[in-house]
Amino acid sequence: MGDGIAAGVAVKVTGVSSTERGSQGVVKAIRRGWTGKEAVVVATGVLRTREFTVPLSDLSRA
Figure (cartoon, rainbow, N blue to C red):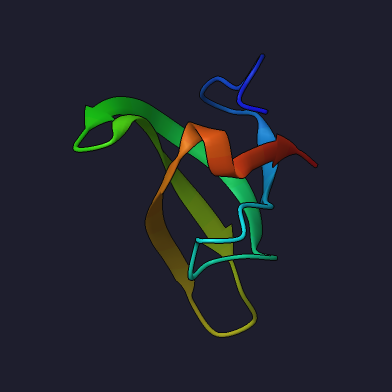
């Protein structure tokens, strides 16, 4: 997991420890965080767009 993930790639949160598990979105940016590399993911919804940060190890390509 986390391989080949870059900005603009569609992803799904698959990590068991993530509160965003099951969410899908597009990677906006990759940055260094507390736990190593993190992805800023933008998920579009019916009413609003939300942004959240997830460790790369919790992501897989959608």
